[in-house]
Amino acid sequence: MIRKSMSLALVPALLSSTMALAAEPPTAAPVIHFVSLEIKDIARSKAFYMDTLGMKEIMAIDNPKHPRHQHEYALNFSGDPRSSEPLLVLVQYERPGPRQNKSSGAKFGIRVADARAMAAKMRGAGYEVLSEPKPDEKGMMLKTMVRDPDGVTVQLVETHFPPAP
Image 1 (cartoon, rainbow, N blue to C red):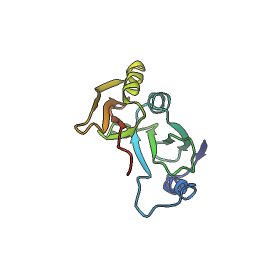
Image 2: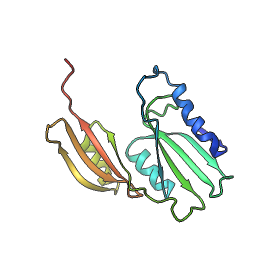
Image 3: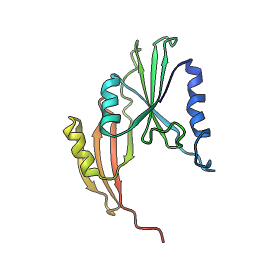
Image 4: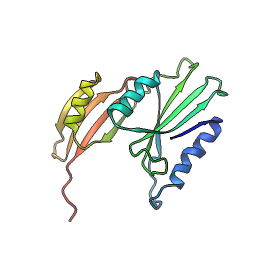
């Protein structure tokens, strides 16, 4: 894990550098590099995303010079900062303004191997399961919805696509 104290102006460059270091060749098509969520409580958010979903912290940035003292935590599933997989960046302010450290009302999806097992794990860890795992109309996906500690809806998707011809 990389731990730094730096100017916020350097964060986009640092996040972009993980793409340049990726072992996979660059693609011609654009890809999502990171999604950022403002959070209230880092311990609760890390418990949800790391302990329950299995993400790993690859970078922590402390910016005490920011007027609100900003902290950022970059997570991915591999734990490899050189990976080209998308990052989830958790952002917390020590001195938040009235609109900071609050849920944006975002919703995003994460592909999982077993949606039923993950829903049970979430429930067992005390998180709200909004919908039980159920297949989509074509039977190619099994989806469940959960809520993170800040109210963000996370859809957990198990896929069952037919083999490529």
